[in-house]
Length: 479
Image 1 (cartoon, helix red, strand yellow):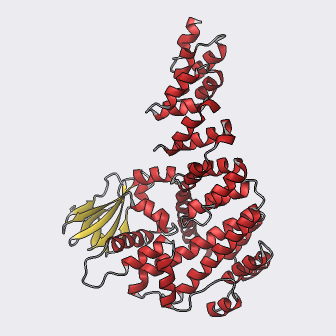
Image 2 (cartoon, rainbow, N blue to C red):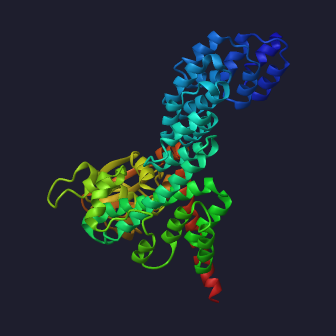
Image 3 (cartoon, helix red, strand yellow):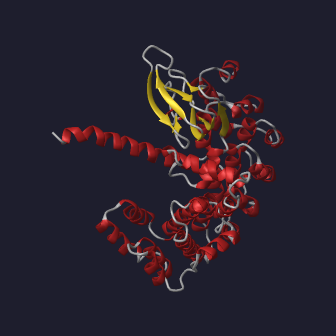
């Protein structure tokens, strides 16, 4: 037994696992430390055999060490339900997710549904997913708590609420989903109709146009998500892909299928949203299915009263007059639009861009000052907000060659935030320059917390690879 107990502390995880299995009688003091083992397999086996007392687990759950709290959660029982519930609000997203999962497993009848429903708005995708699962398992009370978040302006929160309602048991479950589908389709139509009054290229409306476009895309996406939960997800996804990327025939077939999905009014709204033709004609065909703005003034008044914070932020940003000091909203919108000009981020919505923006820092450079140097490690993306810069090969050397001049609005170093390759050129400020710098390691951390961002980044990278392949094939095909 002494040799086996010594093996519990062996550096090799396989040895520790074998020792746990071989010990005939295990004392609490032997296995409780292994609940914090770095190897997940060791933690799982130790948890299964741990004779830790209720008092020991209570102390571990109250610890300031997230690793110890996670270990205790693995074996906590219904007796610890109140302590587990308090961990739903801690700072560590992994701990929040684990607490939600354990609470549903050991005390489904004691789930504090209102507190869990607030976790539908958590910034971490895994926490939102766990919260939706817990609410769905809590019966009608859980569904009703989730339903309060269906109308949330944040897309991720609304999507999690939809998932909870769809997976739960409630007599009005389909009605709740159908009503939200119709409401979101109406909001998409409202934003699309408002865009008519915001001409592209009109400087004074660029913030509101960006926010209205984001609103349209977001509401349309939530509507299709609700439709997936009401109908076959596979069919709805095929329809949506055909509408976004298909040719005329594929789009026509998709619209025919769409007209038979969901309730009749919502289906018509979505079909008209995607049909070809003048928007005025399609809007007229809606009848009274959606309340649409009749003028620019009406749309802006609706935006000001709405719960869409990006529309309200855009309106406040556009309120500054020429010659006045830019307000805080103007600075936020300017930076968000600067990020959106970077192909790597062009498909992110404003909520996701805001999360990226929180990682950025302002940087200023004097004329002839080097911003990045050829051959140095690359770990930041730079957006040129003001001034101009030049890119050089062999800068300051005998074979110096200027590659390009970059005006305000340009960006460089976008690939450096995803790999560790050295800088391929030196970039020098031509005049006083103000930049936005985004640290790659911080972005990677954000992606781990919000994996939905990575999907959009992968789409951009895939498009680049395909474009490069087409360029390589073009000369061969011309032979």
